Length: 180
Image (tube, rainbow, N blue to C red; front, side):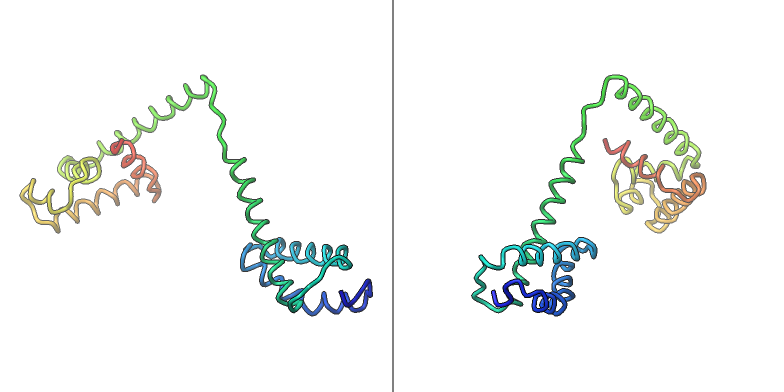
């Protein structure tokens, strides 16, 4: 390389390209601190290997390509770490028993909430959520207009939200419970 351990030239090269290379890395990593670390690692590598390196293109092209590759390697390392963290251990028997009991409690709560909906509205709600019927099919089955079905569905959801303090958790659980 041109600067052959000339600290002043190397420092100028660092200052001239650091911000641009950080932007290049940030576009890939979406993490400012990681981008800075990657660019600093690139310059450390450059300083250590400068006698062995032969750059045949412009420094900017070389540095951009190297930082992109280092950023992609960083992303791959993070994916591997995330995969290792996401591997679930098989729960012990006691843990499975607790899970089953909590599911029973949820099921009971869901049924209790649905039973609080007035009967005709409940039938429309169950026809849509549980049976998967469209509004037009429900209207045809009950001999009512589609707008009545829409209104009854809105009122059912509003009722469930009001009971659960504006939390749709019960409705989602209801949907998942009856879909299975």
